[in-house]
Each structure stands twice: as C-alpha cells, then as structure tokens.
Image (cartoon, rainbow, N blue to C red; front, top):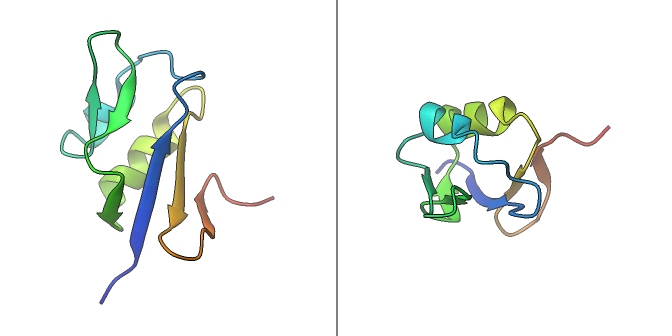
Length: 77
C-alpha cells in the first residue's frame, strides 16, 4: 500500500494563480473568490499533486504524510 497525504492550502497566502488546477485538475478546485482548495484533503501520494505544490508561485500548498505529519512539501531544510 502506498503513502497517503494530507493536503492543505494556506488561503491567506493563495493568490489564485490556478497553477495547482493546471497541474492537478482532479486534486484542486478554485472557489468563487479564486482561492484554491484541495478536492480531497486526504489523498494517495501522486506526482500531479506534488507538481501542483511545486508550481505554486507563493508556496501556499503544504503536503504532509497522513498520520505522522512528516513534511512532503515543502521539504524540511
């Protein structure tokens, strides 16, 4: 069984660039205020969600391992 992730979007940082929706259309949605949110905050680990987080121009997306809370993105320094 693969890793499961918890995905969050810091809506105080999100600028609505929609890069997350472009990279992971099944993983993110924009609301009427053009703020991003995960389609499902608990998801199987997948490259498109990681690419979405990496492409966010303001690093508003945080991914952690479900259960342990270990950071996936952004990586610990």
